[in-house]
Image (spheres, helix red, strand yellow):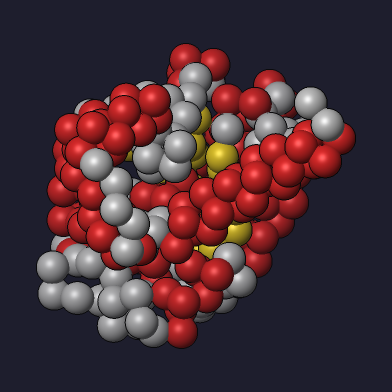
Length: 235
């Protein structure tokens, strides 16, 4: 293969990857009703949001890709939305919802526990929790992705916060390996298990996205893509 051909292949691969990421961000669910294949989870969460009975700690467990982090962000919206819908869904229009979607909200903090897994990282969160408890504020939501990667010392520090959380502080732990978390953390969290999305459901979703983008993809092609995704929406 000529170097120019190799460059063309590389450019094509990079371009496809970038387009995939752009589509994933564009069609990432922003309200509970847009989360596909996890109705057993969203049905309960939207009811809790509607009734304002949101737990202080949630554990979102399941394989990579079915929507754990997206659902956590939507829940953070529902908790803090300025004009929530009567059914419990966030409006997704107010400044708070837009800030959470953009990742710029001061009331929602996401922590990648795979790279921020030390006790110092959790102590920083505990300082923030103490500051929130000291005065009136919006609800603070801490989303800990890959929570099973926290060190033992970090887990113990987190446990102390979960045992007596302020009323306006909520933790959402997302993990692919819940069994690695302390039993005491699991017992203090409301657990939801996310499942791989069925190929038929993914096919319907792909058909809709293709229509929105003006792509002409045959049914067989959509079904093949859905199978290759392995139950992961973002793939």
